[in-house]
Image (cartoon, rainbow, N blue to C red):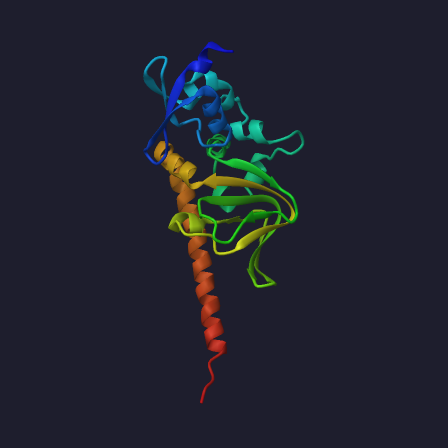
Length: 234
């Protein structure tokens, strides 16, 4: 057993609460689960100081990966990685440089989902935003035995932002139609990015707000058309 295995650590989370103490095995698991990120502050028992996770020797391998992000190394299997160009299919990332993309992706979790898998269930907490790299998804509402598709999601689109920003439950299921590859950005990771890298988070937030505004505007126009088409002049 490594001599450091007996040390304890405390975690200063994005909600400004301190968790722990926890041992190294638990801490590594939290890193793998994306609960502890490279910029997360940790208190180490051995030297009684606060340092960022990326500067903890026992965690160095998880965050210092040269030109490849931690999420690439941790999640992607050979032949299943994704490129900067693939991420730039999202309009909100098109203007970011490679270093900026690398910074952003360190806050994300990479997911692969099989056809038929239910990615989100209606009523689930709205605790993340998703970016669809490839594949197709559908949003559905099930009433009794009736399965109704209320929308489709294709590569280059993101979803889940409304529930995340309003802290509301999911309004529909999201089901995988064809094999899908996604990025998941949790609300906690988003808050941490805003605190630690405001220069990066600001343009992304503004771009997301623009897309949300367009969606709301389009929904209002559709509603007006439906109301007008149902009006009967007498």
